[in-house]
Image (tube, rainbow, N blue to C red):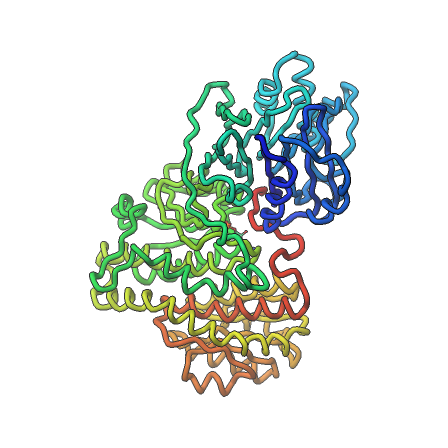
Length: 612
Ligand code: M6R
C-alpha cells in the first residue's frame, strides 16, 4: 500500500527517490510521482502506472534537486490516474505533499474549503488536507510546521505525510499517525521511507517515528516534536539488514526466493531459542509474561490474511499442549465489535509487516481494556512490535513478494515454541512429549529442504492444472488452516477462484461443486484425523473430482486415491503444517507463473495494508 520516499542532503535527490520507489514497489501501487525542490520552486512529475513508466515519461526534464519526495499510490479516494497520483500541489503551487493513509473527515474539510473558494484538481483526500494546511498557514501567517500541527489536530484518520515548501528549500516536514515512517540518518543528509529499504545502501542508522509525532528534516538536522510542539529526542537505532536480503539473488521472482529461503529462515527463527539437547526454549520477550500466560483465562490471536491462518494453526497447538482456551479473530472484526476483554486475557498479535492497520488498532483497543499484548512480528521496530508489551520476532528477513510464504512458516515456528514453553511451565505436556516435539521442531529446516527438492514435480502439476476455473482445498485439524492458506496463495497469485474448507464440512455445501473439472487439493498428511480425511477423499473420488493430495512419504493408501500427489517427510502433526504448506506455496507460484501473472505484485494487492 502507498510507499513514500524522501531525501534532503548534498546528493542528487531524483535518483535516490526513484531507486527508493522501486524498492517499495512490492507494497502494491497503481500510480507514482515525485516532487523536486531545487531552490527555484517545486516541480512535480506524476503518472498512472509503474515507476519505470514515470521515468520514461520525464526523460529530458529538469530533474536537478537536492531535496525531494516520491510516492507510489494505491488508490483509495479516486481512480488510479495521473491527476489523482501524488504528490499534490497546494492551490498556490508552493507546497507539495505525499500521503499514505486515509483522511476520514476529508468531506467535511473539503466543503469548508470550497466555501472559502478553493478548487480541487483531484478526487483525493490528500489534496484536501494539503489545502487545509495551506489555508491555516496563510490565514495565521505561520510556519509550515505550525500549520501542519494545527491541521493534524483536526484530522480524523491515518496518515504519514511528507511536505516540501518552495519557501524553505532544504526542509521536509513529515508527520505520522497509524502509517509507518522511518528516517535514515546520514552524514549531512537524511532519508525518509515507508520502511528502511530505500535507504539501506546509504545508512544503517534509523529513527522510527511514532504516532502523533512531527519531524522537521534538514540535511544536517532532525528535529522531532509531538503535536503539542514539545521537542523529543530522536531514538537512533542500528538496522540489522543487508542489501542482499532485499534483492532477488538469481531467482526469477522474490516469491520463489522466499519459498526457497524457508529452511534457513526457520533455522534462524529457532536459532538461539531452541536447545533440543538441554530441553530449553529461551524467549526473552515472553519470559516476563510467562506466568500471566500460564494463568490466562484465554488467549486471543488477532491477525489478518496469512497471519490469521498462522493464528488458526496456533489455536490447535495451544489448546492441545497448554489446555488454554484460544480464540482467533480477524483484526478488522475484533476492533469494531466492542469485544469483551477481561484482565486475565492475553492477546497475541501476529503480523509479518507489523504495520497492518486493523491489527494495530485492534491491539490498541485490547490494550486499553487491560489485556497483555504479545506481538509475533517479522519487521523489527514496526508499529505492532512497538505497541506490544512483549513477544517474539520471527526473524524471517525482509519479505518482498506480496504473497506471504516464509513469514508464515516462521510465525508457526515462533508460535509452536511459545506453546511448548508455556505448556512446559504449566506442566500440561509430559516431559517425553515435550522433548520429542523439541526434536521434531529442530528437524523442520532439513525437512523443508527435502520438500523443496521436489519442486520440479510440482511445476509439472502446475502445468496440468493451470486452466482449472476453480479449486477446492480441504484439510482437517492442524491441516485445515493449511488448506485455507493454500487456497489464499492460489487466488492471490493466479487469480483462480479457490476455496479452503474443513474436509468434513465439505459435505454441507461445497460438495455440490464437485465434478470431473474440479481439482480438489487435500492436505492429507498422516495425523490423528488421517482415516477421516481418507474417507473424505473417497467421497470426492466417487463424484469424479480430481484429487491432488499432500501426503506423508510412504502413504500408499492416500496415493492410490489421488490423481496426483505432493509428498512431505514424516513429522509430528504439531509441526507438520510447516511442511505441508510448502508444496501448496510452490503449486500456487508455478500456476501463477504458467499463467504469466505478476506473481510478486499481484493486481490490487498491497504488501502492507496500512488502511482499514
Ligand atoms: O503484514 P501482515 O502479516 O499483518 O499482513 C496480513 C495480510 O495482509 C497478509 O497476510 C496478506 O493476506 C498476504 N497477502 C497473504 O499472502
